[in-house]
Image (cartoon, rainbow, N blue to C red):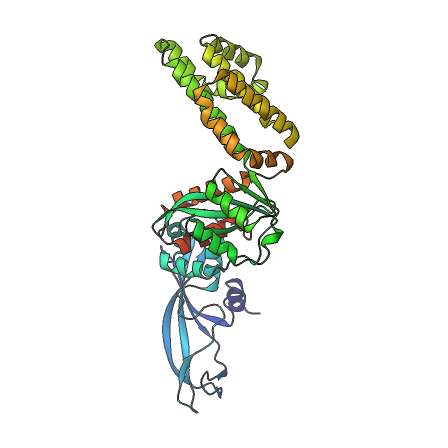
Length: 398
């Protein structure tokens, strides 16, 4: 194998011959052509090697030695004497109408799996944003064939196609995004789920306290257990505790008010997880107000309920919490009580299974990061494709 053949093999330019090389301060330019050979006419299938003309096409390739590589491809066009048709020669490293090689396409597809904007990808590969968009369109965008055993619903603020929120469906047990829907309307979700024939295979549906999602789960998965994510339950209590703290500190002197505000996390945290020093600090704050002391006791009883190991134990502790609330009658905790009453059976289901919305919330954070890097997406199809690509571990490293 000659030196030129080694070079074309290294550059992955199959059957190419390097005719000339030029290097400038900005780029490396290679003039290349392919070996002349017999071709079949695309119209009549007759063989021919009669050359019609040559045309120069400027093609982008990956960088070499830190400089962009530009190929001046002297493309040969053949002429068929049988039917008179002229056609371009077959090329193994370049697609039809493409202005960059398959190597660049592969690089773009790799970068699309990372939280890069399309503009940054175009800059890295020395292509255009429209070229990156064409590569993005190559990504398969079909819906999954079947529903998983554990299904999770949630929404996120996407602002794509004029819709403020989009809906995300995940498979927490398999740790993958199932699909992204263009909006969170019940009609959209129902139309999507109606096409699946294995709805009876879904055993758990995990969600936050969304009545629309609950009604859909009841209608489409009557045999499945509806599980409310415990994080969304716990924050009702922490919100109530924080409301009591704010109400109490309004009547304090400025120095004490600042201390209460800075120490809010100590009041919200579980007492068992605090150090001795932090517990002493909490005890000092509790002496300022009887209402604050009562709220803190109610909060601690709530977290005893949240730490239960089974639904039966959780039901007993929840009953004690309701009794304590009825005795204390703290208005800040009334939304928490109402939530627990309305969603009690679905909250208790969470104590008998290991599933939650943690994976889904993590996906939402990744989507927010992707949207922030890209300065938003107007086109939902592109937004959905990017989300599914970033969540796909096919290219774990650049």
